[in-house]
Length: 481
Ligand code: NDP
Image 1 (cartoon, protein in one colour):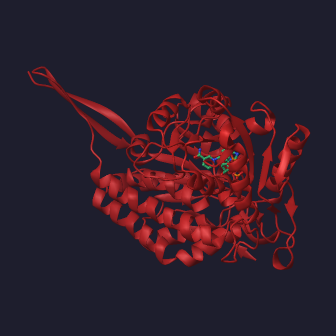
Image 2 (cartoon, rainbow, N blue to C red):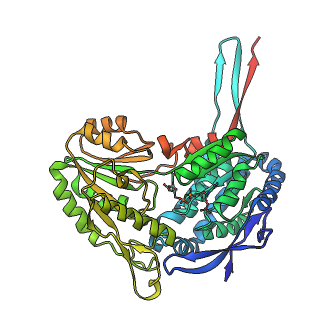
Image 3 (tube, rainbow, N blue to C red):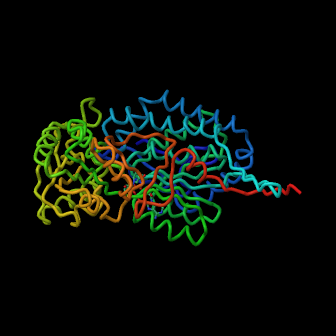
């Protein structure tokens, strides 16, 4: 059985207790590798190594750090096939999605911040003849990065890249559900010449390793992506320690389709925004609101496409929907579907587990599920399901749909389909969300602010915003007299 190892001080090691957690391939429902079951003392070791490495790394030139990050980006691309296959096996996502989105984006994250750090600048404020201020931006020190299972390497590198680029040393924890590409990444970092101790990757359960990172007094900032409940736990522990925090949390995103939209584009993109990665993207639009005039037409066209989605072995090139990430998660999604039925929802398609034959006969597959007939304030339309489940609801007026869209605890992203520019701008103004996509979905420019409002999070990631998060400003005031 393959063993994943921690990466601490440049070495690949077991947890100090030498205990292991099973790692399951969700498409076949079987254990295929082992993960170190690390805890506080492994984090302590990682923090010591990161502290030792900090001076050299933070004082190294921007060119040097940029070169190392670019080396890592190149090696990710060189290892594209292996990484994509590993991501697909570990997570259940279609191999072709891992090749098209996850792994290229991981490389892009590294290359982007390798370049961003070279183009960054800090502010200066002049006070006529009195004084001049300039802002020094210094790396924070040892920082913690905790990421989820849905886009494993993509989100792991999205945090690590700016933290390293800004000169910090890092303790990172991938989800224990999908640790494999983080392990392969640690080998890539070694090969790329990243100095020992600059990045330390510690595997294990969130409640142990994640909690140990959060409470460690020498870890000065936490960048976390995951569920809202976990985010609350982290904030409770980290806030009294006055740690900097960036919390990227859950969503229940509305997808609003007006009658004057580009119909074909709205339908095809809505299929993607509903079911890509089995609906396990925080930005998926799980509540589709359709202007009543085109409700039936949209429903028919949408269902026609959904019925054609190919659910099968993630490793097959023609697969569009793979396995959910774990048996627990599959059961959670099926439970939500049960609740939707109890609430009076009509299942238009799907609604059940799919049992495949052959290699994947024990895999955790759920049919893409479309539900209608539910009020906007029911549990199904309020709670994040994070699976291949969407609801369809009609609306008549702009103000009505704004109220529905904003009427959850979340505020991560929204999508609006209309050709009317004034209406689009009004919606962007009124929607309470960190991102509003107009006539598109998941179009990402890495320079833009990324994050949520309300219970979808605190803080922003992305270009300048991430570099700001991972540095502390010091204002220097020089008298001119
Ligand atoms: P979790 O919150 O369960 O886990 C996220 C990470 O936190 C994992 O590495 C987990 O470890 C770790 N963790 C768990 N408990 C603790 C703890 N007490 N202290 C510190 N760390 C802990 O989220 P999921 O992995 O289930 O991911 C799905 C969620 O992530 C969804 O809600 C989704 O919306 C959200 N998400 C948000 C995004 C955004 O940008 N806003 C993007 C992607 C996902 P382990 O897995 O080992 O338990």
